[in-house]
Image (tube, rainbow, N blue to C red; front, side):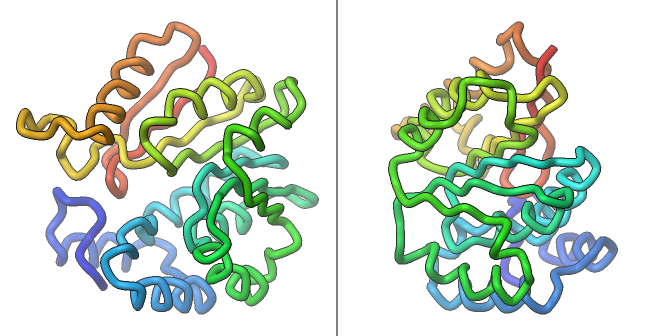
Length: 219
Protein backbone atom coordinates (compact mmCIF):
# COMPACT_ATOMS: atom_id res chain seq x y z
CA UNK A 1 0.00 0.00 0.00
CA UNK A 2 0.94 3.65 -0.30
CA UNK A 3 1.75 5.70 2.79
CA UNK A 4 -1.23 5.63 5.16
CA UNK A 5 -3.68 8.53 4.99
CA UNK A 6 -3.76 8.43 8.79
CA UNK A 7 -0.52 10.34 9.44
CA UNK A 8 -0.40 9.00 13.01
CA UNK A 9 -0.24 5.34 11.89
CA UNK A 10 2.83 3.46 10.74
CA UNK A 11 2.64 1.82 7.33
CA UNK A 12 2.71 -1.59 9.01
CA UNK A 13 -0.22 -0.82 11.32
CA UNK A 14 -2.17 0.70 8.43
CA UNK A 15 -1.64 -2.44 6.34
CA UNK A 16 -2.75 -4.63 9.26
CA UNK A 17 -5.83 -2.47 9.80
CA UNK A 18 -6.94 -2.78 6.16
CA UNK A 19 -6.14 -6.51 6.03
CA UNK A 20 -8.38 -7.20 9.02
CA UNK A 21 -11.46 -5.46 7.69
CA UNK A 22 -13.35 -5.85 4.43
CA UNK A 23 -10.66 -5.18 1.80
CA UNK A 24 -11.15 -3.26 -1.46
CA UNK A 25 -12.65 -5.50 -4.12
CA UNK A 26 -11.52 -5.75 -7.74
CA UNK A 27 -13.30 -2.58 -8.93
CA UNK A 28 -12.13 -0.55 -5.95
CA UNK A 29 -8.56 -1.81 -6.24
CA UNK A 30 -8.47 -0.90 -9.92
CA UNK A 31 -9.63 2.64 -9.12
CA UNK A 32 -7.04 2.96 -6.34
CA UNK A 33 -4.32 1.89 -8.77
CA UNK A 34 -5.43 4.25 -11.54
CA UNK A 35 -5.67 7.16 -9.13
CA UNK A 36 -2.25 6.43 -7.63
CA UNK A 37 -0.73 6.74 -11.12
CA UNK A 38 -1.73 10.43 -11.12
CA UNK A 39 1.07 11.21 -8.68
CA UNK A 40 0.89 13.41 -5.57
CA UNK A 41 -2.64 14.61 -6.33
CA UNK A 42 -3.80 11.05 -5.59
CA UNK A 43 -3.50 11.98 -1.92
CA UNK A 44 -6.98 13.48 -2.24
CA UNK A 45 -8.45 9.97 -2.45
CA UNK A 46 -9.85 8.61 0.81
CA UNK A 47 -8.13 5.62 2.41
CA UNK A 48 -9.39 2.04 1.93
CA UNK A 49 -10.40 1.70 5.58
CA UNK A 50 -12.36 4.95 5.41
CA UNK A 51 -14.12 3.67 2.31
CA UNK A 52 -15.06 0.44 4.07
CA UNK A 53 -16.32 2.41 7.07
CA UNK A 54 -18.46 4.60 4.83
CA UNK A 55 -19.99 1.61 3.03
CA UNK A 56 -20.82 -0.02 6.35
CA UNK A 57 -22.32 3.18 7.81
CA UNK A 58 -24.40 3.78 4.67
CA UNK A 59 -25.79 0.27 4.89
CA UNK A 60 -26.50 0.40 8.64
CA UNK A 61 -28.35 3.70 8.26
CA UNK A 62 -30.46 2.34 5.42
CA UNK A 63 -29.56 5.36 3.31
CA UNK A 64 -31.87 6.13 0.42
CA UNK A 65 -30.53 9.58 -0.49
CA UNK A 66 -26.88 10.51 -0.04
CA UNK A 67 -25.05 13.64 -1.12
CA UNK A 68 -21.33 13.93 -1.69
CA UNK A 69 -19.52 17.27 -1.98
CA UNK A 70 -16.19 16.64 -3.70
CA UNK A 71 -15.91 13.45 -5.75
CA UNK A 72 -12.36 13.56 -7.19
CA UNK A 73 -11.84 10.24 -9.02
CA UNK A 74 -14.87 8.60 -7.48
CA UNK A 75 -13.64 6.18 -4.82
CA UNK A 76 -15.74 7.60 -2.00
CA UNK A 77 -18.76 7.70 -4.32
CA UNK A 78 -18.24 4.04 -5.18
CA UNK A 79 -18.07 3.16 -1.47
CA UNK A 80 -21.21 5.09 -0.56
CA UNK A 81 -23.15 3.78 -3.57
CA UNK A 82 -22.25 0.22 -2.58
CA UNK A 83 -24.01 0.67 0.76
CA UNK A 84 -27.24 2.32 -0.45
CA UNK A 85 -30.59 0.73 0.27
CA UNK A 86 -32.55 -0.71 -2.65
CA UNK A 87 -33.62 2.18 -4.88
CA UNK A 88 -31.22 4.55 -3.15
CA UNK A 89 -29.23 7.19 -4.97
CA UNK A 90 -26.17 9.34 -4.47
CA UNK A 91 -25.90 12.91 -5.74
CA UNK A 92 -22.26 13.79 -6.39
CA UNK A 93 -21.22 17.46 -6.54
CA UNK A 94 -17.98 18.30 -8.32
CA UNK A 95 -16.58 20.81 -10.79
CA UNK A 96 -14.09 18.58 -12.61
CA UNK A 97 -14.99 16.51 -15.64
CA UNK A 98 -11.36 15.40 -15.81
CA UNK A 99 -11.14 13.76 -12.39
CA UNK A 100 -14.66 12.37 -12.23
CA UNK A 101 -14.30 10.79 -15.68
CA UNK A 102 -11.69 8.47 -14.17
CA UNK A 103 -14.25 7.04 -11.78
CA UNK A 104 -17.12 6.43 -14.17
CA UNK A 105 -15.84 3.15 -15.71
CA UNK A 106 -15.13 1.79 -12.23
CA UNK A 107 -18.63 2.69 -11.05
CA UNK A 108 -19.94 0.70 -13.98
CA UNK A 109 -17.62 -2.22 -13.26
CA UNK A 110 -18.88 -2.26 -9.68
CA UNK A 111 -22.50 -2.20 -10.84
CA UNK A 112 -23.38 1.06 -9.08
CA UNK A 113 -23.31 3.61 -11.92
CA UNK A 114 -27.10 3.79 -12.10
CA UNK A 115 -27.24 4.84 -8.45
CA UNK A 116 -24.94 7.85 -8.93
CA UNK A 117 -26.19 11.24 -10.13
CA UNK A 118 -23.05 13.24 -10.92
CA UNK A 119 -23.62 16.97 -11.22
CA UNK A 120 -20.76 19.04 -12.63
CA UNK A 121 -21.40 22.49 -11.19
CA UNK A 122 -20.45 24.58 -8.16
CA UNK A 123 -21.55 22.48 -5.19
CA UNK A 124 -23.42 25.30 -3.46
CA UNK A 125 -25.56 25.74 -6.56
CA UNK A 126 -26.38 22.04 -6.58
CA UNK A 127 -27.13 21.92 -2.85
CA UNK A 128 -29.36 24.99 -3.00
CA UNK A 129 -31.32 23.42 -5.86
CA UNK A 130 -32.36 20.50 -3.62
CA UNK A 131 -35.74 20.61 -1.87
CA UNK A 132 -35.64 22.41 1.46
CA UNK A 133 -36.92 19.33 3.27
CA UNK A 134 -35.22 16.81 5.60
CA UNK A 135 -34.51 14.31 2.84
CA UNK A 136 -30.76 13.66 3.05
CA UNK A 137 -29.87 10.51 4.98
CA UNK A 138 -26.10 10.78 4.58
CA UNK A 139 -23.79 13.54 3.39
CA UNK A 140 -20.04 13.54 2.83
CA UNK A 141 -18.07 16.79 2.64
CA UNK A 142 -14.59 16.49 1.11
CA UNK A 143 -14.00 19.55 -1.03
CA UNK A 144 -12.55 23.07 -0.83
CA UNK A 145 -11.97 23.84 2.82
CA UNK A 146 -12.97 27.54 2.87
CA UNK A 147 -16.50 26.50 1.84
CA UNK A 148 -16.91 23.74 4.43
CA UNK A 149 -19.13 25.90 6.67
CA UNK A 150 -21.38 26.86 3.75
CA UNK A 151 -21.76 23.24 2.61
CA UNK A 152 -22.51 22.22 6.19
CA UNK A 153 -25.30 24.76 6.58
CA UNK A 154 -26.99 23.77 3.32
CA UNK A 155 -26.81 20.07 4.18
CA UNK A 156 -27.85 20.44 7.82
CA UNK A 157 -31.01 22.25 6.69
CA UNK A 158 -31.88 19.20 4.55
CA UNK A 159 -30.66 16.44 6.89
CA UNK A 160 -33.17 13.75 7.88
CA UNK A 161 -33.89 13.39 11.62
CA UNK A 162 -31.51 10.45 11.92
CA UNK A 163 -29.23 11.53 9.11
CA UNK A 164 -25.46 11.89 9.39
CA UNK A 165 -23.02 14.36 7.87
CA UNK A 166 -19.43 13.13 7.43
CA UNK A 167 -16.70 15.74 7.11
CA UNK A 168 -13.24 14.75 5.88
CA UNK A 169 -9.73 16.09 6.56
CA UNK A 170 -10.62 17.59 9.94
CA UNK A 171 -7.15 16.83 11.33
CA UNK A 172 -5.46 18.19 8.19
CA UNK A 173 -2.35 16.06 8.55
CA UNK A 174 -1.88 17.39 12.07
CA UNK A 175 -1.89 20.97 10.80
CA UNK A 176 -4.86 21.92 12.97
CA UNK A 177 -2.58 22.05 16.03
CA UNK A 178 0.57 23.31 14.33
CA UNK A 179 1.14 26.94 15.36
CA UNK A 180 3.36 27.44 12.31
CA UNK A 181 0.46 26.75 9.93
CA UNK A 182 -1.66 29.77 9.07
CA UNK A 183 -2.61 29.25 5.41
CA UNK A 184 -6.19 29.71 4.24
CA UNK A 185 -7.07 26.02 4.18
CA UNK A 186 -5.68 25.26 7.63
CA UNK A 187 -7.44 28.25 9.14
CA UNK A 188 -10.68 27.23 7.44
CA UNK A 189 -10.50 23.72 8.91
CA UNK A 190 -9.78 25.12 12.37
CA UNK A 191 -12.68 27.54 12.13
CA UNK A 192 -15.04 24.81 10.91
CA UNK A 193 -14.03 22.42 13.68
CA UNK A 194 -14.51 25.13 16.30
CA UNK A 195 -17.92 26.05 14.89
CA UNK A 196 -19.24 22.48 14.97
CA UNK A 197 -17.93 21.92 18.50
CA UNK A 198 -20.20 24.66 19.88
CA UNK A 199 -23.19 24.22 17.54
CA UNK A 200 -26.08 23.32 19.84
CA UNK A 201 -28.15 22.07 16.90
CA UNK A 202 -25.97 18.99 16.53
CA UNK A 203 -23.96 16.35 18.30
CA UNK A 204 -20.63 15.45 16.78
CA UNK A 205 -17.66 13.17 17.21
CA UNK A 206 -14.27 13.46 15.52
CA UNK A 207 -12.71 10.07 14.86
CA UNK A 208 -9.15 9.22 13.78
CA UNK A 209 -10.10 7.60 10.48
CA UNK A 210 -8.07 8.62 7.45
CA UNK A 211 -7.10 12.26 7.85
CA UNK A 212 -9.72 12.78 10.55
CA UNK A 213 -13.46 12.30 10.02
CA UNK A 214 -16.20 14.14 11.91
CA UNK A 215 -19.64 12.53 12.22
CA UNK A 216 -22.49 14.96 12.82
CA UNK A 217 -26.21 14.44 13.50
CA UNK A 218 -29.09 16.42 14.98
CA UNK A 219 -29.32 16.74 18.76
